[in-house]
Length: 374
Image (cartoon, rainbow, N blue to C red; front, top):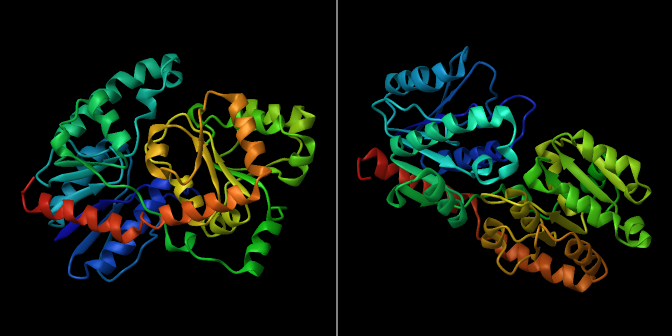
């Protein structure tokens, strides 16, 4: 089988959850299927993050993205004899002879009202929703990360349930390793940290609800804040949240360390006393899985996808309840045995989400699509 893969997510200086999951899939698939061929199709700027003897690289300049999506990609697939295209997001060519499998990770921009208030949102979202519905119809199979996301796709995009497959995500083996204490300490020192902090990593869009985490943390007793600083990592902190943190004395222990290289992530998780993830909405919650794999106790929201992922392996709190978040933070930081129990159950839960399991499920879908059985 020849599988075409859109790898444009691998852009220099941009490390995303989609990109990391794609790396795990391709690295594992190339090893599991040495007789299959994977044609990695990207634009002129994308990085090549997976190399194997059965992976071929195709670079095509992307002067205008819609043309690349709808014409250039389809032509490349036909030229290289692909049996199926895999797109790690919703973007796919709406026409072409090669069957398509894509992934829809979440529908944040449709589910959240705060992404549909600006004039630009009101202009762009309706045609984008139409495109998504056309893509759903065009795809032979659409992969989703959770049952919660599958329900959203059925409800909002009118997807045929028979064409949806739930394939939970996986994270890399390095998150399951114990790590070297000396190397970990070097990573913490590089960011001005020492072990024992409350950690958040991710975006700072409205649905991530990080302001609630910051306010709940600021309400903690001073002794706890001194012992357990709050560390925020990921995309740049927006100006309003930055002002809030810098203007309040009770936010002084908050450290904003920005984007971090993938190789530093496991050590940063392992140094945390608690991982906090207050998101209103997720399609899966990859940082939560990474934290559990690293053996870090998790406090997250009651968002359906996070409840599905963590089950009883995390403490969950209503993302709208600021008081409850403050109470949960204080309770967990003062109860080391409870944190240890969460860490152990989280690691056991994370062990179910292996790259091999995810990859085999995806390849099984590709086999059936390539053979015309879906």
